Image 1 (tube, one colour):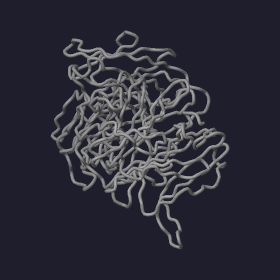
Image 2 (cartoon, rainbow, N blue to C red):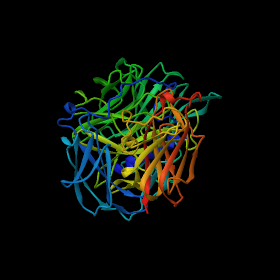
Image 3 (cartoon, one colour):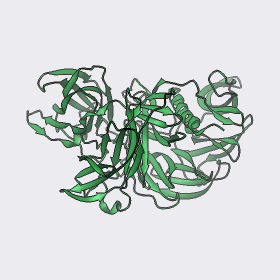
Image 4 (spheres, rainbow, N blue to C red):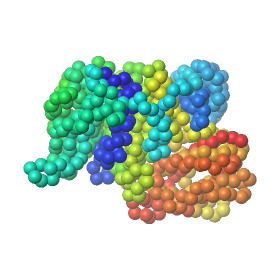
Length: 591
């Protein structure tokens, strides 16, 4: 049997390979733009009496081998206007947002908690969480670039496929053209390859298992069922090119054997589109299925073969329009993650938790940022033999957008943390995959805007200072955002000291169906008077989340974003009604 680390690395690699081949890994129909009911990222005291918690995640800075920094996250509250962060019982900082970075810690274990304050009076104390800093292994690791989905470094020990007994098996299903009865027919081809080592260059020629002409498969996944010794293929299945059939495809494959189709129909009569399979601790598998035109999510228990739904366990998130449902279990709690129906464009990820799949789930809560860092939620995998870590893979569908992203389609992986039914999710520039330590997040510099201030300069020449929402770290869909009102306008960030800037992340408002692109320039200055052009975004078509990287080591104290227009990417019309900038996050190093 292959190790958990191998299996989950393979999940990431397989999904990226499918994307590169143009194979859909999640199901979408015609671009759909439906209004979902957004849960606020701020929560009321009544909701948090025994659930408000903080997470603490160790990370390292680019160029260092010491995982000696900690990112603390929490959910903002309606009864707090500021938050005091504590390390080992001692206050270290007071902030107004929902995150804080603690840097340059000695190797050791630390305990963090957060207190909420309103008008100077404490209103809440979070559940605490421990975190351990360490020095990363000297062994080579896989280094993944979250900007474009490419690997900066790969180890030669990686294998692919499922290790069953002493043999590795690799299964693929892809859209192709095949000659049948003297005619070329388009359809989906399912193949099997095997290898003694699972490494590149050792695989047998693919063996055809099945061919399905004139149909469509989406949301494809493979899982190994230890009880049966067979590999299960799951997919959203359509009889033709449309989306009206809304069926589930479940089949099991015997290694070196045949395919046995268990289900090629609507599960228990319910339509099914976006779907995934979750396997519980006891080996029982459950099908998660977006149903009723993606309005609701059904949870079905599958039989022992994992190929037939036998019971509708629960219908959840009714009329919430959630897609790409996925579940993970951590410390006895089930966590559900999904994206919003938004065609190929990014959307706000949301999650919920429950102690039983058939029980009551908490209200959907925002996680990550308003655009899931420019992507859509899809899968979760855990890594690490001695330190368990979690990565949430979300797809950036750049090749499908009206204005294509040159980087195309790829998985952007966020780092998940859990504590007392609370989940947090962060973007890091790079990820290292270490067999022992799991995912090691790598941030492209310190968060320079942690102590920065922002000032807006309007078209009239009027200035407005102290715009805290742009630098407080809070960038959920329901977080406060800045609106210029009319173009042009500028935003000046004062970093307080000169700094070498390595990366800037800009989070902008999204209205599904009227996604907007900001036309802008980004400039740097030492004195706040004389500016140098750093980025010309006057032809930008990226929506929701922008990653701007810099090689220039010139130190700057001030950054100025000059916005010339806000444009609907679908029709090119000005869309100031949909504007809003949540966050300008600047990373780098102080001089």
